[in-house]
Amino acid sequence: MMRSYRTLILAVLLVALIVPVCTTFAKPKPRAVVDAGVIAPAVSVFPGTKYDNIYTQEAYDDGATGSFEVLQAESAKFVAVQLWADGLLPNTTYRVYVDQNGVTPGDVSTAGPCTLISTFTTDATGYAEWYYETPSLAAGTYVWSVYINRIIYTGPKLTTNNTVLISDNLNFTIN
Image 1 (cartoon, rainbow, N blue to C red):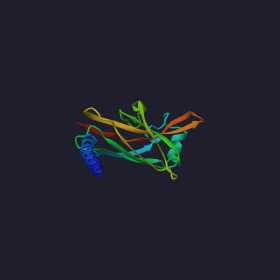
Image 2 (cartoon, rainbow, N blue to C red):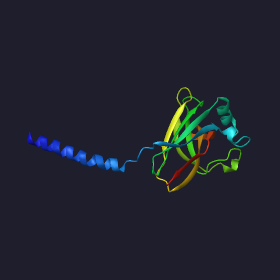
Image 3 (cartoon, rainbow, N blue to C red):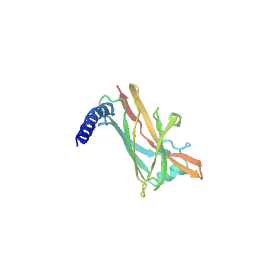
Image 4 (spheres, one colour):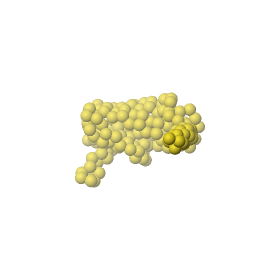
């Protein structure tokens, strides 16, 4: 009986010590929207370029579009990006890339280079939500753009990786 009390007291003390440590090192959750915008078919962002192809035209014809928010906690060294896309192909996997230079619509020379961040899969209606927290960033002003690419595999080989949607620039500052 005495042994079980000691075990219980030891367990309570350990939890009391661990919880504050975990709370101290946890990232603060983003609280404020610092930027928001739309995600448009790539063909309308860069018409008459490599972004004007059968995959971007399909997304355009299907009414694919989206929106995003950039969230940031006060004094945080990171941001979170939340995006919503609709009108994409149902039950289809897409890649998400970030262009850390932003884009100027109509000027394809401003596109890229892009970094692959992750993937998402649309639901049965072609809708998807995606959330990403950046790692800690250096102080400065950032202008990014998000590219959503349709991917197609033939067997194990990736055969298609075409941008179908491109976001407005995501603007935020890290102090």
